[in-house]
Amino acid sequence: MITPYPSALTIQPVTRPVNAEVVLPGSKSVTNRALLLAALARGQSVLTSALFSDDTAVMSDSLRRLGIAVEEHPTTSTFRVIGCGGRIPAGHATLFVGNSGTTARFLTAALALGHGEYILDGLPRMRERPMQPLLDALQQLGVDATSLAGTGCPPIRVRANGLRGGQVTLPGTLSSQYLSALLMIGPCTHDGLDITVVGELVSRPYIDMTIATMRAFGAEVHVSQDGRHFQIAGQQGYTGRSYVVEPDASAASYFFALAAVTGGRITVQHLGRRSSQGDLHFVDLLAAMGCRVTMNEDATTVEGPARLRGISADMNAISDTVPTLAAIAPLAEEPVRISNVAHIRHKETDRIHALVTELRRLGVTVEEYPDGLTIYPATTLRPAAIETYDDHRIAMSFAILGAVRPGITILNPACVAKTFPDFFTRLESVLAPARV
Image: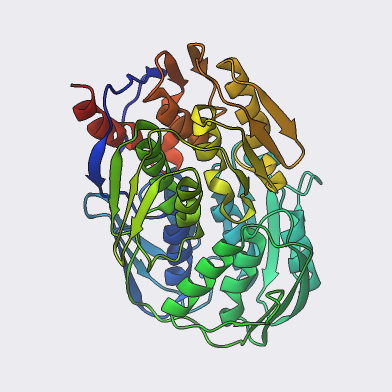
């Protein structure tokens, strides 16, 4: 369902603390993993509480183009998938992945299981997002996988003749999605995969999420004690099942931040200690800033303080929440330093530079570094129209700042369709009662 938005949306600030319980859409990261594993499984899978957004739409469309039966039921947030038993039915396909990094990386690896020639392409920004480490890894396994423009980015051509498996070395510094992509195809190979990661592995919690989803569909992964060596036995395959997608922890960060900046209280239901998503640890940063965090098995509550404290945070493991923290950082009493996130320069936009640019547009003093930024307290903010760079996380993050400071307008608010199509509608339902 498409939510219509104007070309620019001015956020009206609240006049008192927010107080709400919210239920959020399913995780994009989990939905796209589950869609792929259901497609590779034997038999039928039903994914419930799943996310319906641009990123999951291009994944499901691409799977259908590969000959896999995927039924969409948006009104019930359900996908029904008839798996292919680890084989790619289509011998030829052209896939369009938009600007979805998960779809691009996961499918490029999965195409190696096929027999034929496949082309994968996306939007102009996707053509700037690096894929070469994954292509190199596939080439180590004997797959003819190349960047047609010679840039290491899409469009990608994969000429496949099945995949026996083998040993592969992969750098971990640019994106965890390369490793996730290889892990997920391992059980469908004949001989299995033996993967060694070289260098720091960014966004490690996403690997844990991948492995948890693989285990849910019946496959096993052995991880070395140092976390750099992964062994996946071949011929395991996956088994179709009913699978409930948990709410999106990255999306929850905006509502937790809203509680923090208004001194209010927000509870996100169905997202608690059992979550497989590392981004839920964003609440630990809010706790360090003075918030009260309460978490049980199936819900998380954040209560904001009278004033937020500044912090210094290595956000490598939860880098999708960097924009959330950066956008509310000017409201803290001391500087907020975010570090070890150089890889987010290769996301939907260069997120570090985009955050620095837009915060400065509001009159905030910001220092930019290769791997992060420092944001200084701002007693007042200039009214401004925030450029979102077609990046959903920039739009949603600055909307939270707009909820407590007047004059903030979000340009191209429809870009949230990538992962959270009705974000502004849900946000308004929480803000409106706090304006009375």
